Image (cartoon, rainbow, N blue to C red):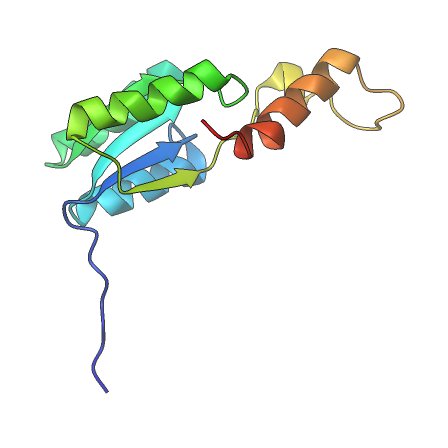
Length: 132
């Protein structure tokens, strides 16, 4: 039996929520195997740092500020990737809002602030299903 190893070399991949954590690890791993990476994140400074880490290691990556709860922002992320790399071959959506003002204030739905509830739903549910 032959080992079949799929290649990502040359693929253009968006990592939505790719600035830190699992998203950043996936971005770095794919880049090491030749993928061109678009890192979209609300934390643009960390997204830039992750993209810089990839490019300084010989990979190709760009960072684009993006908010998963905003359709225009999602569209901008995709269009930015297309402009930078001539197209997009795949999307990995790791987006979630882990900022302390959100994560630290969620909990019992009966006691949760309505703004926190809306933001959590917009990012973690609605944002993953927007058709842009």
